[in-house]
Length: 114
Length: 109
Image (cartoon, rainbow over all chains, first blue to last red; front, top):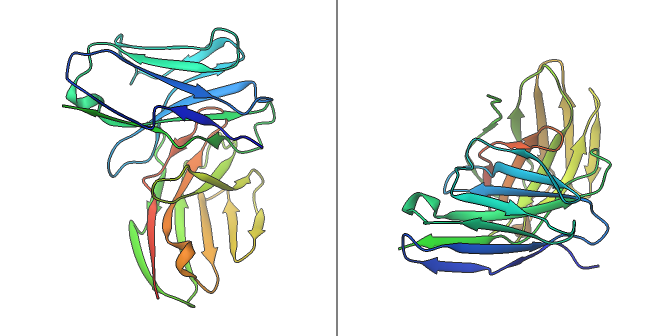
């Protein structure tokens, strides 16, 4: 059983650069979620997809952030013109249609902006 | 804005002792309450999803209770072991989960 896979595990980049992260959900899951976690805080919701449709987007997600799930399988999260405040752990989770079942998380991508 | 609060923020427990901690959440428009265990350098691991008032769930030495009318859930660990050291997160909601800041548990051998 393969779980949720995220790549890369770590990303270090200079301020102003663009970065893209990838999430491969559990294959039979049609819902995919992105969260961000900063030091001392719990994960914060960013956005989620049902199949290829992006159904909700947090106000935390500025115009510099975009997420896609073009074929309803893997998803990408892109941050343009990164800022120091973007440094965080970016977590992806997936679930099936039964919302009484848990969301299954990947190991996350830790982003550090120099 | 939903407030999910967890207490205590951190806890040190002697190996073999039992412990518990609290998650409080809005009592209106309840859908589900999730508990996760998050060990350093690993992914958050789902422990329980609780949906009904009065629910009690158990997984090995860990159990949880739910009171949706007053807006709280307790997580209990019986006979703590070093491998229980982790951050325990609760989250409220359906698709869009609102997480607390977690309780960091350290078991002292």
